[in-house]
Image (tube, rainbow, N blue to C red; front, top):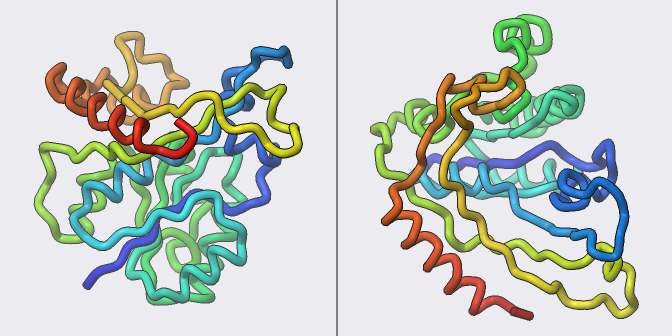
Amino acid sequence: MTKILLTNVCKPYYNGDLYTDFFTYRSTIEDCIFALSGMFSCFGLHFLANNLDTPTKVVEFPSKDDFINELKEGYDFVGISFSTIEMERLKEMCLIVRKHSPKTKIIIGGPGVQNKYTKLKTIYFNPDRHADYVCYGEGVNFFRKILGLKPKNKINYPTNLVGETTLLSLKNFTPPLPSIMKTGYVYTGLGCNHHCIFCVPSAFFKHHINLNSAEELYSIIKNIHSVILKSKNY
């Protein structure tokens, strides 16, 4: 049976541990006593895994050794998500796959591929050394086509992902203090009507995309809330 591994680029990251801290890295302008720190999963990778109908494992923020050891499990496909500034690390990971698991096909995608796709394919990637497939745009049916599966019209929303949020000022206490808030993931859509040229959904789709109806969103929120209530330290 076909096996798939989905991951993002390997550690170390250009900005250290802040790479995995959504609030501190992206939503905090300056330090203050109420600044938030939050650790979140790679939602896009889990979203893909939840809609491929084939054994798929998600490995988040691996070290190089973690990645090499995981490849020993024998995957048919490895999907790597990256951003533009992670190009060199991506190339390194592709070469690692070629060395340690040469029969594995490499699929790359994520925000990094929006930047001049044809140039990316011809200058940065030699098909014999780097990626076998470049996913430009919507990933679920891109993967399903490669796997020989029918297109999927109704998505399965991952409701078991819970992020942990605390105050940045409390992170360095000994012993560590528990998180002050559990956070779920609810994506109602992608992009907006302004179609800014720097926006990934606009680059991929050229228009706003609604992911769920109001009824579906209500059901998703209820499911996520039940998971949060059952989680530790709620």
